[in-house]
Length: 311
Image 1: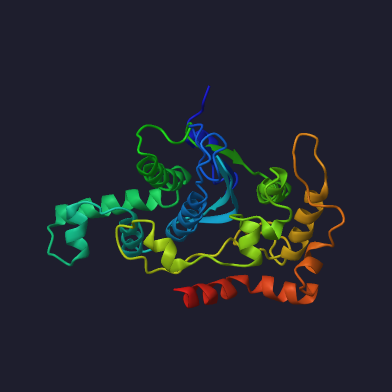
Image 2: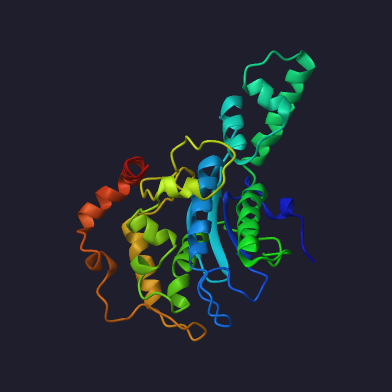
């Protein structure tokens, strides 16, 4: 029997969660359908763009993701939106939805009565809660993708097989193990040989950020202009204490080696693995470990600089 989401999601216990959504129909979400031979590869970019844009609007960070042929994985960190001003809450929510006429009048500076102002405050309070809510994040991610796919397939009905599945990650070990599992999904499925060549995954994005801000906005049908910078993936920082949660308390170079080592293990129930004869990942990337440590410590600044150039 399914449980209410509020019983499954408890930010006071842990802010980290693993989420999965699967496609309901035999026709593939992404990739090439073996039955019809039709390619849906472009839908991977739809989902990747949407994940990154929503993360920039919501008080939710992305730790890891992988977009597969008929499902996708997300590892997220929930934050609080309490520090955001009412104006910022309106700007963020109205990027996704048009909002009621009353809020639009308030935002345009029209004179309102006290009762109307109170109503606006109540609406903003609801939006504030939604912008830190995992269920609303997934709703805003899945619904537009389903509509776009249905239009493309010229059909109606459900696109996702059920509500998304979520799993709490209660320890640092669980978080790292889940992130590595997600980043290795394309390799285990036999569609990629190495993490750095795994398309539409967080580990490839961390190694070589490539999100095009202009294209991401263009294809997402946002309700208003997107003026905020795209938020980078939650950074690694091995200087963090276990009680701090503004990053992942682990060295990125160590994480790369962890993923590389894990991917070499051959599993009986999976088709793929990283070839054992390949050199270590830092050598394959031709990056000295010392330089990689410097780059990973300033990852957020590097990503923002590249995004500004792309925009």
